[in-house]
Length: 450
Image (cartoon, rainbow, N blue to C red):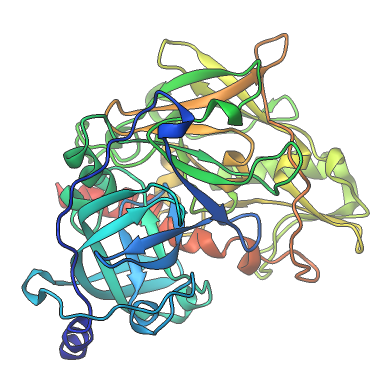
C-alpha cells in the first residue's frame, strides 16, 4: 500500500513557498473571510484551495484538532468541490511519511506532504499559507467513510497535532505573519434577513456580526495538565476553558473535579453535539425525566438515539448554563435555551436534545477530569474569537440585567427527517472525528508523548 501511495503522490505537486499576505484586525475590509456551508446545520465546511495551483476542497472546520488532511481520491479525481479541474503534477516525494489517525469510529491513513493552503472565498483577496503539513488520506475505515468528508481543516494549537505540530496551519500562519494567529468563528442555523451566513474569519472579528449592545469577554485557555495529570503544563493544544459550574434548570450537574479544580469545556466546532461526562449526563436525564415525565424516551445502550421527547416542544426543555472562568478572575454564565440545543420534528411532534455522553475509550478520563465538549450547538449561539498567540478565547456576550450571557437569536434549523428517534449517526457522526482528536488523542495519547 505504501508503494501505491507513492505512485499516487507522484501525480500531485507539493506547494512552493510564497509570501503570506498581511491580515489586520483593524477593519472588516482587511479580514480574510471563508463563508461556510452546512449540509445539516450542525457541521460546517469551508472551501479551501490546496496546492500552489490550488484545487478547492470542502474541509470540515474543526477547532477540536490541529491536523489538516484531505482525501487523496478527491484531490486526484478530476473536478474539485468548486467544479475546477484537478491539477496533477509530480510531487517532492522525499518529504512524505506515512501516518494513521485513529478516531472513535475508525481511522484514516496515508502519507503527509508539505502543501500550500489558499484561504478565502473565491474571487476575494485571500491568504496563501505555505509549508503546511497536510495528510493525503488514501484509506478510511467504514465508520469515517460514512461522513463523506473531503477533508478536515485543523484549527487547534500545535500540541494537539498527531502529524507535525510545528507545521500545523496556525503555526504556519504565525511564521509568515507579523500579527498573532487569530481567527473567529460565526456559526448560524440559516441565513437571510437579519441573520448573516456562517463564516470563518482570519485576522480578527467582524463587528457587524455582533449586536450593538454585545461585549467581548476574554477567557484563558487551560493547559493540558488541567485535562490530563500526566501532561506538561507548558503544552497547549485544546481550546479548553475552565468550567466552574454546569447547570440545568437551575440545578447543578455533577462534574467529578479532583482537588476542587474546575472542570474543562472544550470548544470543538468539529463535534456536532454537546457531550457530557457520564455522571453529568445521568443527572441531565434525571432532571429532564422529572420535568417531562413519561413523554421522555431516554436512550439505552442498545439504542442509537439521542434523548427524545414525544408530544413536546423545544420551549419545554429547561435552560442549560455554563459558568466559564474569566481571564480577569471570577466567572460569567452562558445560557443555552431549549430552542438552542433541541431539534424538533414538527410532523412527528418529537424533540431530541442534541446532547450525549462522551462515548470513547477516553470516557473514563473525561469523567475523572470533568471534561465537557461544547460542539457546534454551543458555537452557533455565541460568536467566538480564538487567539493562539495569547492563548485565549473571547466570546461575544449580550447580557441580561443580571449579567448572564444570552444566546443570539437564531433561525430554526432545517434538518433532514431521519425518522424516529433522532439518530446519533446523523447528528453525532462528526463527533467520531472531532472528539477522537479532542479526547482520544488528547486525554489518552498526550501523556505518552512527553
